[in-house]
Image (cartoon, helix red, strand yellow):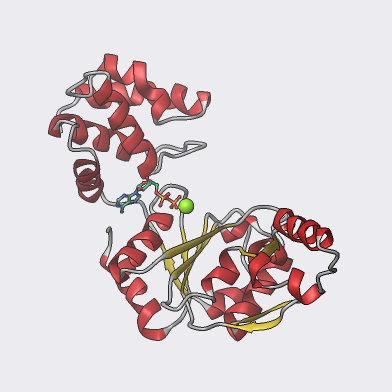
Length: 271
Ligand SMILES: Nc1ncnc2c1ncn2[C@@H]1O[C@H](COP(=O)(O)OP(=O)(O)O)[C@@H](O)[C@H]1O
Ligand SMILES: [Mg+2]
């Protein structure tokens, strides 16, 4: 796990019981940080992936219509009409991440991932949930959290979040890892990649991040690139390897055109 400050921020989530907002470019390890927190605490990770148009209801629960229908048919076959309370009971409730997170006995880590993709209305609902820790399901009434989950929110900054949400959360800006840290990540994740190849890839990726690219590579791309080179049998990053596999790390034609000659020159230079 990169960064002492990030480690401290994650500890404060548990010590203060406050949500943590992690912001930073795509692929720097924000989601990974929440997974690590769950691992360290030995607890469950419950993830809500946000998207445009996500509403509170979809994030909370759904009724299992198929089962409700089946139940209804069975009851009818015996000449009985089930009550609403029966049909809208716990048996037919499918908990979505937010309701699940407040229904656990042991506090889980609740990851509200890419919250910047959801809209203002959903953000307002989240704020309320984070303050009150209770939700209302029309058919069931108000449900209060059994225990409070450890909350991590992430944002790629596609949209500015409200001041109110920021104020409620602790904040940490996640940077790309240093070259040494990223090399460590590659070595740990991909033991099959030679040391020379891992070093070459990390050096090149760090050079790429200095360029004005449309889509700068994240750690995910570093890992993809190293993996691609390795399965092709490369043991070092040379010009040929570079040209045949650049698509694993740069995903825009303009980026590749800008970067290829510069990387080639870098390869020709010793460290
Ligand atoms: N510090 C890290 N240690 C280990 N793996 C990492 C680290 N940062 C990122 N990764 C890996 O890089 C990829 C992208 O990370 P992710 O957490 O999805 O990025 P983000 O959520 O910031 O977009 C994942 O495959 C993740 O496992
Ligand atoms: Mg993520």
